Length: 191
Image 1 (cartoon, rainbow, N blue to C red):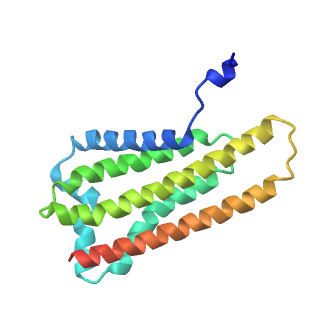
Image 2 (cartoon, helix red, strand yellow):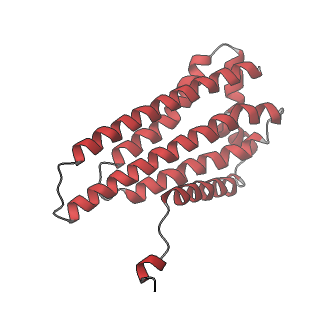
């Protein structure tokens, strides 16, 4: 007979982060219903991105894209070093989804919806995937710190874990930089 612990469903962090992102997107769409069209279009930023691309502002597009997702990446990185930051890490996924939900509705206000979708969706989807991976790593490290602080477990192995954690976040930052450069190139190709 299976034990009671084996019958309990396990917490799947990837599904939780994806579900929180989807819930954030839904909340963002509902929140955007009360906004006027000008504000929604401004928050979406696709028209601004395409006009920057038309005037040769590819570097500004890169910086805007990278700084937006980079702020969430840095927040997730530092949350990983806190033993009780798990709710904040989950909130970061929902917060990203909230912004995407507002932007999704703003896309439909653009004159050329297909160009707006092409300028928005690839970067939004791929960068959100990278951010979910980073939030998963931060959650795991903060759970490790929580386990270390609540037990008398050997702390010698944490140095290697922090080294690996930092290396992964550098890779995530590099991926986000590459995606931001591609976002700038796509916007340039669309105008």
